[in-house]
Length: 434
Image (cartoon, rainbow, N blue to C red; front, top):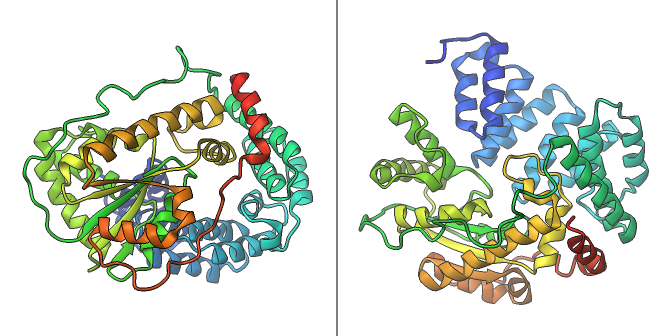
């Protein structure tokens, strides 16, 4: 049992630890348990904003972000957090404004430069290449992590500016630096997996349980493969509430463990059949809270972890539907390779061969589930969606149990062919085992 009304510093430390463990609900509880003295500090309000964003309560998170900025106007760090929050909320214009303001407040802010590197110079109106170089040079020897992060930002900025050869060389160096800093072995013992992990097909069918209330639609795919683009087709429709990449299912598992009294279930993939009724009850309550009266609640989920979760989702949640997204392999691999992932489970993302191996596993899973459960799993290609967004929206609406579209679909960002300038370099790197 946590102590009642712990010190503000102790409450914030506990909340930060919970947030780092991807338990935003526990982080919120840690702050609220400490009372007004802890919850009212600027750092606590910022962390609360990030927690509510992680849980999909975007309006509440936005209000908290704006509160911290009113109390400390022009704070570059808070503006950076707000910028990435808006990116998660699929509001790039507001994100760009926040990153610009952070850059104006501190031209060498690593976070502001990382955010701006996601936009082409024509979009941002800024040439940030000199600032990234200056920011890297200004870092001390004890800040190699930030230097590596800025290396990824520099590679993305060079890519956006069309300097592809230098972008690739910078990207290779950044990935190698991250692997060295984190102690990631060049190749796992026995190499990267060539086939699906044992048990990935699970057990087909359900136990006959029925579900009432809103329907969950999960858009799954590899990172940077177009999941958010597909979700955005549904997000603006009546009766649909978008959750984006929030942790609803993980939160349900955490609540189940709290009810049991021990951390018996490490993740959704390991949910014992004997706990399905309790899990469904928790899920139904939380889904209704998140959906806020809407008929459909959507969220995105990244592979490769989703591969092992799909059979449990299909068995535990019969009304849930999965849209499984594929994208051209090298385009997907490049965009993954360009990002500095700092969450657990992304070790593969710093090797092209590791990325390509995981893409192969995901494609095998998509083929299997689209054939085995066609009424509950819909396979879509990112490129086909951009070729005909109206047809894709119609297919997705029918699959989700919604009326067909009555208006043209929104304009979608088009990132097809991004790997074309790098194809020869990527193939050479794959041959070298990089």
